[in-house]
Image (tube, rainbow, N blue to C red; front, side, top):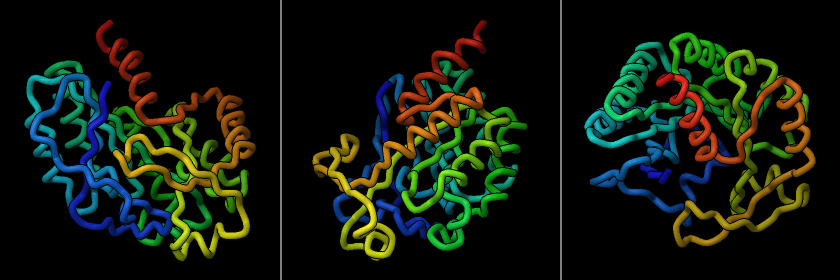
Length: 253
């Protein structure tokens, strides 16, 4: 499976302070004219599809006849049922056309700090209620816990798992990319946590980024998910491969 990223044309209104979408060395991805078979499409990968770009992106995705297309969408916004029904229709058409599928994720990095560092996103409770609506409408769903923030205690991550495991056993975890000249870094990271340099393969030739990854905290989160009979993926592409091999096969049996 290949990956196709589509960048938004304007800055996301979510105002997440750790967002890398506005960094100078973040690669902007143009909308491709053609899509190959067995491709995962990430619409507005550096923003949110539900931030004024939904109709444009949905229209684009509907035109992809003749390909096995997988669509992966992540949101921190509170979206109403009208969007969910239209995504459900797209999911049905992707499968009917050529056994493609759509997966929707709700993303978390914290609970208590949402009003502080994710100022214009959905509240924690709005996100939990959205997951239930996604589940009830029958869309494939995975919870994203990313970035794992070093200053958020483990108990908050355990609570996210407790509040979401009943809707889906699948989770994607990830570390925190940081930029040292940002106010977020100076306020929350500098002098407090160890920073590593990491290759970012999906970011083209733009090289390496600094990242904060607490292996001990991540391991405990993974163990807690496993104790709840959940499954952890280290990347979205691995999660989509799993859904393709398991959920799509179940549909054809």
